[in-house]
Amino acid sequence: MVDGRAKMEKTNVNPRLLEMPDGYHPLTNDSVWQDAKRRMDPLLIIIQGVRGPYGATMENEDVSSVLYEIELAEKAFKKQNVSKMWWRALVALGDWFMKYGLWLGIMSFILYFLASSMLNDGGM
Image (cartoon, rainbow, N blue to C red; front, side):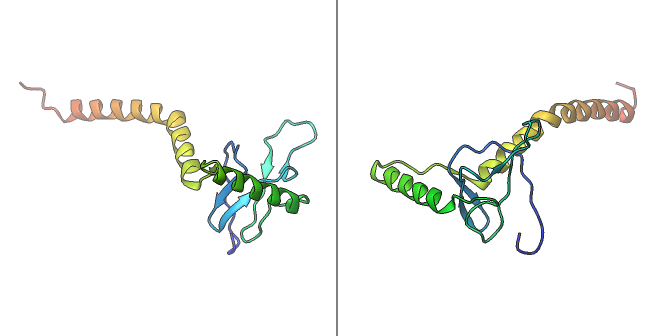
């Protein structure tokens, strides 16, 4: 961010355009960073206010090809495929619920029945 903060997301990005708070950023062919042995997850570093991702040396060619793809999609009456911020946040929320939601539900279920049995006076 401009104020010095960094935001980290773990997501799969397939489209050529990535939506960020300052607008769309093209995904270039040379902007994904990977370790030599491919053991760690690949990284894509996007700086706010800069058009291409960090390390993108083919930015001019890739931006012109992205613009050409947008023009072709427009002529074919198709929507441009963009990785939206809200969709990535929704997927991350769904992943969180898949990871912790079951255990949270079980624990709340147990706590509810423990509290109801403790507060019950035992009489009918």
